[in-house]
Image (cartoon, rainbow, N blue to C red; front, side, top):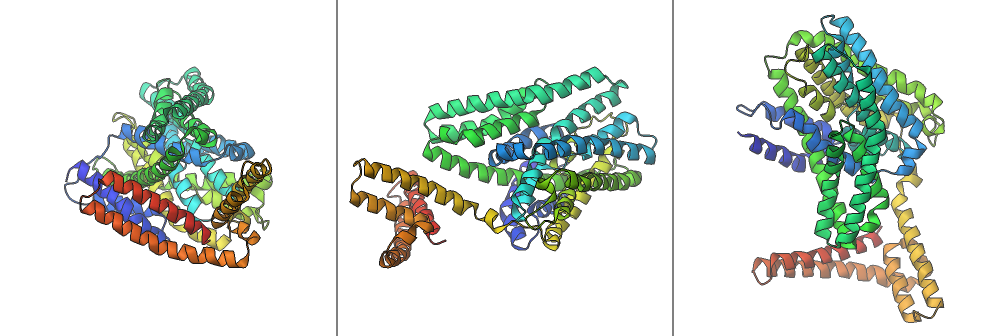
Length: 514
């Protein structure tokens, strides 16, 4: 079985396994990791699917970019103290604690190797955090904190990792080099992200072709990541900043068709790449453990590092919940300690930890022990914490308030209200007659239920009846168009365009049913 076949099987697993995992309440990242582990046990499967040094450049940019586009600059501004503490303070503290514990358990580890191990296991996985946070129904501000931490915590960890690996290989540590790398990451990387985001938005606004708009948006995260990596800075920060710019202020640059198509493409791509990354984690874990070059005598170090990483996060986050103000200390029912417990337990390691561990040079001192301990942290946190986190959230009762769950309806009502206000202005100026105004009001009432209250009862009933009849008519439309395509009477492109138009009408009518 060659590598391409295994990749295809993993992608099929994402498509087929994820819906079943959601149905049975199992976190999809955990299920996909286990699937990859089982696949790695199949005889004659290749040792590596992707070169270790390509894992981060291939997967991290689109995943971070997609998450950043969904995020809000307002949330970053509101939670900047908490995010700074988690992404910088907690990463630094975890690295130091893990390094000290690892060297205490195994004195043969050099300081550089111990620090590298600490940097490898210190950042929680951004993909796991965003994947789980969204589906657990957590309070909005808690999701913002977990996603924000996952987006930026790799920057400092990768700087420490690079410096520690260089020091371990050369037996020399340059504080000036480390400070310079950190300065590039903190100062230059956001500037590169701003430049890429602004240039991307400008180009998209001038393309006026949905295919080109979406294609360019797919290239932007790699441009930001590779651009700053050439300067030995943090590609993570550059991608996040570019994603925030395009996500928050770039939607008006797209044409209507480009915006809709881009949203669909990015959701599917984010889902596929994220799922494949977790399958790759499980696959690589088993292959590394089965490698005779990985010693089991590192079990003591692995156990100590796992305990140190989990305990350090808990001891750091729980007090933070009391000093970070109402954003972290109090939920709607006032149980701030529950939020802190969830944040402390949501520290799953994954793609970044595995990729950086596998990327260690073969002549790195203590590489087998560092590799084995890193794998153990991924398994324990991703599977152990990932499986128990949904139960913990339910047991603690950390859930979104009802007003947070109705944001879609709120946004829809505000948008319709603005449209109605503009309609009244046009009507008052005499540019729209009464008949057109009445027709447009009824169309908006189908989308926003609140507007139906202004309509007579008989009109509302006729709208509901018309919606049911329209559903049956659309079924007939779809069957007829599919028949034309299957008989070769129209091209597939023409048929698909009409089918998309029918689906769009169906989506608009489905909103009216809620």
